[in-house]
Length: 301
Image 1 (cartoon, rainbow, N blue to C red):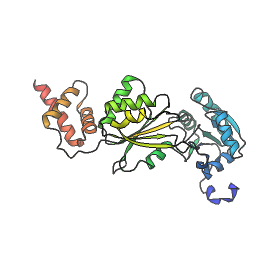
Image 2 (cartoon, rainbow, N blue to C red):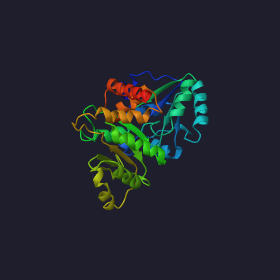
Image 3 (tube, rainbow, N blue to C red):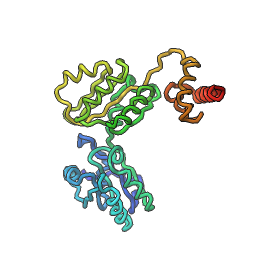
Image 4 (tube, helix red, strand yellow):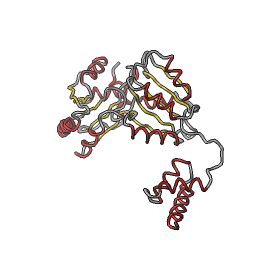
């Protein structure tokens, strides 16, 4: 297939002296885009998270370019090398091991440095495990507004994990995170312990690959599912449904005041209002009034 014959690939200006952030497949090689192949053939060099991994991908499509290793441990130094090439009016691409660069992968610092140096950064979209998982989640997992929050990799420091769990339990947005095969069992059991038994979860394993699985569960079913599952190999994307409106009346004013009073020694009125609004679903106006009432009560004590 001669990519040069596809005139639509040339619709966008592709200037020299620019960095192209190119998305690559997350598993199935068939998910690479025509535009990604066109760009990778066009550029003068390719910075890669892992040159050995990327070499196999490039070889598969007959792409032969000079490659530069640029990963989490040398991103700043590697960025300067890329910038030198851009200064010589070359086009360079960056690809991570899988998916869209800079999304829980190296690449963000490279973008910062290139832009600081005055060069253009041009995104070349493609496969994303986050978007892939969302597309198969359905309305049970996503509310009518389709709002979600991407959390990156699940934290394993106790304090960070506890703060995140509190946010997930109260948020109306669907929460999405990555997890490794070595930690997924412990993480799922932690979720089962902290979430309501009916809280909906979608566990996605090995998306786009041969052994792809999408398992829809309630939190109360996690332990039994893990008992019946022998292997948890592969990479995981986990979706947690947002808190659903129960139709119950809003908390009483006295209960809201107790929340605000507990926060009052540590936060100002605006910050308290923001917490109440996010945690309890109050309007910003009502949340701010509760914060002011709590401050007034405290001053009168």
